[in-house]
View 1 (cartoon, rainbow over the protein chains, first blue to last red):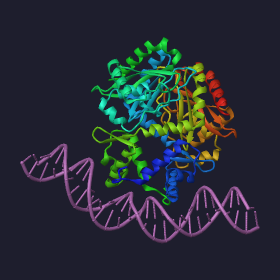
View 2 (cartoon, rainbow over the protein chains, first blue to last red; view 1 turned 135 degrees about the vertical axis):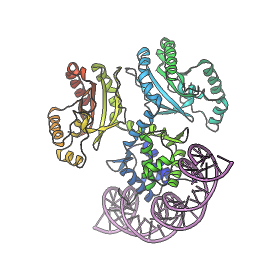
View 3 (tube, each protein chain N blue to C red; view 1 turned 90 degrees about the vertical axis):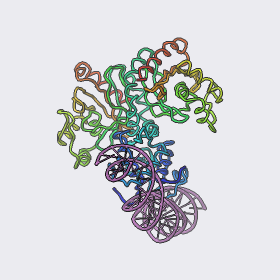
View 4 (tube, chains in turn orange, yellow, red, green; view 1 turned 90 degrees about the horizontal axis):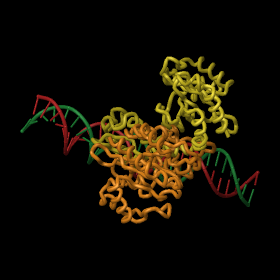
Length: 247
Length: 247
DNA sequence: AAACTAAGTTTATTATATTAAACTAAATAA
DNA sequence: TTATTTAGTTTAATATAATAAACTTAGTTT
């Protein structure tokens, strides 16, 4: 990374937080030094500071976990997005008409970040909560978002990054992805046919700002067995929601 | 704060993040130096680093906002709590029987932090999302949580901290609070009669771990006009949910 | 019980982050 | 237009954070 105008202590904090987030209440000081390569005494001071600031807390046996400040900063991040609040109000109607879970996300590099969710009162619960990240090319929302970029930008974005393939149906070539994005641009909506999670299908539509550039996407997810009966209504409903949010 | 084994850069990052979270996309470098008292060149390096790590991002006109990493760390914090997932599964039943929003929170000093929410498909939406903080003494969940501490601990906790009074019904004396906590201990549940937000009432119950110590609370919230008709059913339902989670 | 190991804490030195001050560029006023 | 202010960037000195190594404590092995 850039080495000028750099604050190494913040980078170290970053490494430690990621290590703790990856497996909370499983790592002690020494584990963290091994995983991050940070000096033991440096780690000692760092953890003291982060504990005092309530960035981390120590559970039984000096194992570290994330502090509640991150729930609060996460909430601040989400509610700072002007779309989130409107989504939570408007999506209720969509959930009520389709009876399936509706979500909002944005693109971060090659990943989508879930911003909000309105769940149907269903026994089946999706594991994606706001803040969850998934590879963009595996999801309907991700493809709807990527379709908002010119092909050249998409190529550049994936240069040197192979396409992960979590299910047999996942798109695994850039050419295939680009041709699908072209279809999405024509169509105005994107589909996911068990490409992210086996047994689940989605339909997504892009949300645009005043200038017409894509800033987020919304989707409806359902078990594959619902697809044939709900597909058309879900497509219409998610298009409607996306249009309402595009203002 | 403790000045030994201290990493000032992390404390500075903390101050900057809080300042940005307080009013995102409203502050530039100079605004942040004024608000935090951090030197301009230090701030420059700090912001460069935090931007590279995607802790912050710059919107139009070099105004800073929080980066999406906080949504992800927030999600990691919340899903790290073993109660959250079970709550989201079990609370659906509670929502369905009462038709009102059910929430989960824990105590952090004199505040409650919301950990999860199951909303009724209602036109009225509560503004509290997971990560939101409220003064404990103003809420039913807060009082249920405080009732899990001995009186001496509660007195010590509030020493030097006056009780905020957001509504005319809010408890504003420590003695009054302690006598109410005693009633909650006898009763097993806590009420909020428009003490946090005018027009809203809640009932809450404590969730205990295997040793019997209170680790979280659950609540049902509703508009005051629902109270007389729903009060008894809500109390029974929230007690049931709390018992189910207390294992 | 003694020796050993592992985890965390302290310290003194050294490498470097922080700072004030100077500088640049852009925006605003005279 | 030129002066003035403001916001951000660069630099050189100096104050201090990061480190290795030593130390302490507790737990484990012989």
